[in-house]
Image: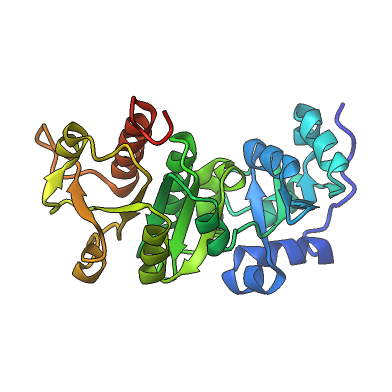
Length: 281
């Protein structure tokens, strides 16, 4: 039988403090955010931020503690405070309709943009004017899967630590450097100075992705700039790029959504960079 919960009141000060992190202003003030579910908490427990464990606190139901003893062991090893909590307590903190029984409180983990530039990245996703947190988290996950070196969220984009963004990344928040609040002009200018080609993804692009691949232009260091879900990239942002490229539509679909287009573009670069002559070959 799972052990009895020790934390049973949703009005506990610890619970109230964690619950407030669902709001952006409190996250910014405390520099803490919530990570929910076994995958995100497992990754958080293994991660360090500035030499300190990223996971600082864990709320778990008895059933979740029984199902995921490895996660609890990792949380204890990281020095996190672990609270065995009643299901109503975890549900009070959770931002999902169906809580999975594990909610972690984590330190902010964004990376200064200049550190990303200094590392001479070869594949970067720049999110300019992306407002939907689910899309931002999914693009972060795609960038992680494609082997990107970093993700940059401009100052006009959604909060990296929005609970929906964290859930959508499924742990990828903890896998690669992410810079936040960078003006798009600064991001583009500094990456170009570091030898990175700037490619804007836009449905009205002059060339399509197939043409770029056929020309062999995708094998070098590349930063893809992705725009807003509804209106794409404004002209002033497109004009900053070295190329504006569209994903070809071979069927009858009107368009691709942001996350799908980002996955196609990032994987195209990843493949080109790993072929003969590519920057990762």
